[in-house]
Image 1 (cartoon, one colour):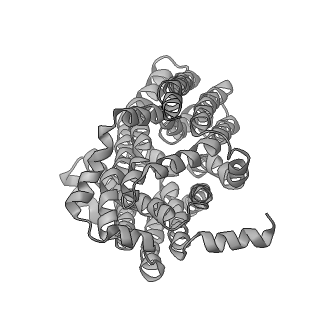
Image 2: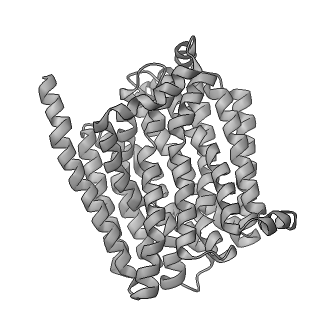
Image 3: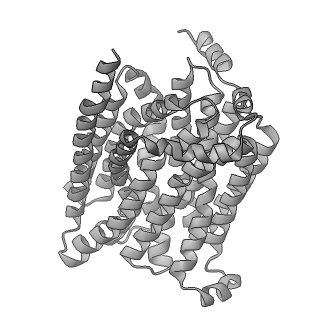
Length: 428
């Protein structure tokens, strides 16, 4: 395909809403990952929480961010993506602002009335509602704003832009934290989110397919659709297996900052430790389109199995030598599998969605991420404390995570042979 034909495919294959939604998602991810890069260090160093409490808070936050789309995806389908996106960005900005203000003098009466743990939990859960509502709206816009021929490319573009934002966010946060501190970084995230609410309100127009599917639909039916998928126990089992893969990934956010700060480079400024989390996303932003083209003929489950195996290898990489650069190398290794697995996973889920239920099904696409983040929050703090403070062999915690990644790959192989290939053979 020559350049002119490629440009024409992009113009004809995607509606304007596709580009508006994905542009807003790019900046939303900048804000989200700028916060994520420093949330662990903020809870540990600024708020003086312990390893376990910090990890639990992050686990609950991640569970809410990625589990709520299952429910609010139905609301987005019913009320419309444009209205839902504006509300989402307003909530998003408020959560970031409160997090950046928790140590301000005007918050002192609230901190006196509530323990810091519960106050922070409330702020994080409120803030989680914003990105939770953004996700099914943008993913649903990709589904309804692209043609059947361009949908696969659409999800590759979506995932590519997400990772550009995820790569830029920690780097932007590094500059802000170094100059102004962590609280200023969170407040800048709030400004970005508020700006996206204005941008979407002005420029976003609902795709025709989404409007047509919503016509005549009732809210009761939309909410009922959110429970419909759970009747398929094989699909639920698939979700649980994939969650092990994401458990390994979120060790980079829940465990890695404290591990590097305490056991690898204790004199390294917080700003540079936060920048470490951008390695995975930068790799994906640079190479995602190329990898998608090279692996477009790889079956979905083979791609996911490959991703889980690479996740295990990335954990081993981190454990080999305690250094900042080896930790960054581990994230880069992880990205190789993620570039193959993730876009195909989203495409696979989107093709299961009946017309008018794109938001619901794309909400369920984030369920394994929610469970993976939550489970990492449950065990990550304990692993860091036990291997670091009790047995004094902190590098060994990465071997435990490597074993979980390898187990996920084995379970995917079993699932593929038991259900996917068996189902294809029966259909044939």
